[in-house]
Image (cartoon, rainbow, N blue to C red; front, side, top):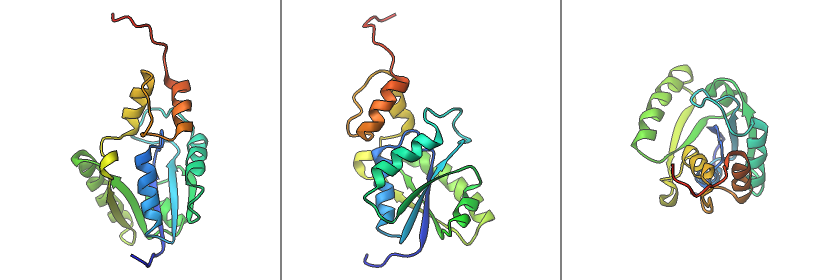
Length: 172
């Protein structure tokens, strides 16, 4: 595909950003002239985030700095409003499994009702990332697991600091 077109938004909580997220964003950047990564400030589906929106923006900017057509912004509005504010003609999200599809199908219908002029496009996760979720990574970090190949190294360090708990070696 040689031609790209327009602006797309890649929304998410990115708490934390995973290598799967970065793969979807990079792939979208090859299709669109401009990609705005939208970091949801206060996600509705999550009770509390580990990192502030500002921290998540910094993590993403650091990892995406080589992609000249990608910009990272926090937002706290409806996704379609954020897309319009950024001149996006598409919302791009990744799909890993059937459970993702069910949720995204519903969100697509709601977004389409509010903004029929903005398309929702879905990219299937690369095989090595189909198991990868932010919630799974957080659980692993809580128990001190090696997060290599799941999140960027700087994110792994911060997750261990924020969530890691000392190991006692005892089973109770």
